[in-house]
Length: 124
Image 1 (cartoon, rainbow, N blue to C red):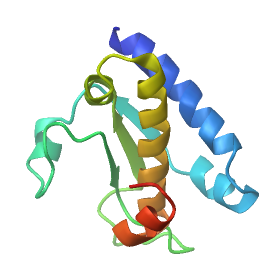
Image 2 (image 1 turned 90 degrees about the horizontal axis):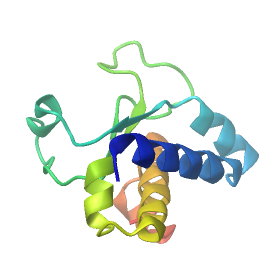
Image 3 (image 1 turned 60 degrees about the horizontal axis):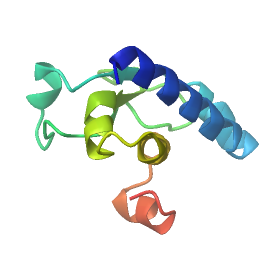
Image 4 (image 1 turned 60 degrees about the vertical axis):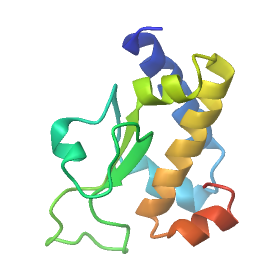
């Protein structure tokens, strides 16, 4: 499947996931841009602990109630669609499930949840 098709599917999945969030969280989620890329670029891969097959990444500052002027990047969620497609072994149903899970996982990082918090919520 070509990137344009994967992006269209992923956008639909993210929109549906956002609609199912509780109202307070949905409002916060709407404020965080989701960027769709095929793979992580070299600048991302140069960061510590980022593997080439990473499925998604949250960058920027966590939600703290106020904008942190000292933050280096605004918050955003990156979804790496070719990596997700490869992970799903080119199965659209699995791809949709993994896009949803990865999006919610990265949104959790924006909300300040650590890996333990994410695991408790089934987002690991």
